Length: 202
Image (cartoon, rainbow, N blue to C red; front, side, top):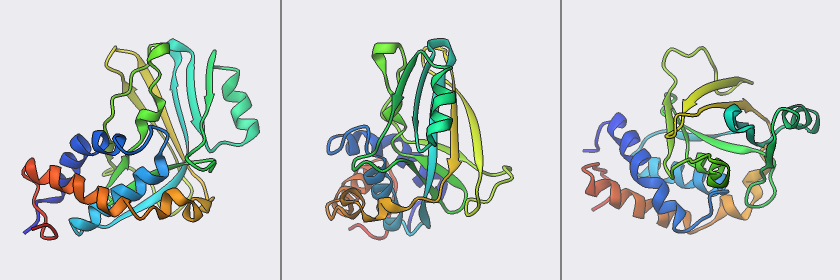
C-alpha cells in the first residue's frame, strides 16, 4: 500500500531537489518537471506539466528574474528592476514548467533558479509546492496567479505564473532524457527512507 498523497507530496518537496541538483543545474525546469512526473508515476499519482511564463520579483532588492514573457512585457518589467535576468531553459525554450499533482497540488521543482546570493536573494534548493484548494482556476485554461512569499531574510517576493501555449519543450533532449526515470527511482528510494511507501519499489 502506498503512503497517503499529502505525505508523498510533502516528502517529495523536502528531499527531491537536492538530489536533482546533483545531476542538473538550477536552470533545468524541463528536466525537473519531467523527473517530478516520473516520481509521481511510481506512487500512482496523476501528474502533468503546465507550461507558464514565470516572474520572480523582490522589490526591496529591485531584482527580477523572468521567463516566457513577450518582449513588450519584459521591457515593462525591466524598467522596474535595477537587476534583471532573462531566463532560458536548458535548450532555449522561452518558458517555465510547473507540475500539477492529483489536480490539487502545484509544484515548482526548479524555483531555486531565481537564487541570486550576490544580490541578497537566497532561494534554497527545495520544491515549491502549494495547494490549489479554494482557488478559482482551471489549469487547462489560460490563467495568471500571483503569490506572495517571505524569504528567509525577511524580504517580500512576488511570484507570478501565467499559462502559455508553447509546448515545444516536448521536443527537447531535456524532456526526452532517458536517465530521468532512473533519477526518479533514486528520489523515491530516498523518500522511502523517510517513510514514504510505494508499491512500485521493492
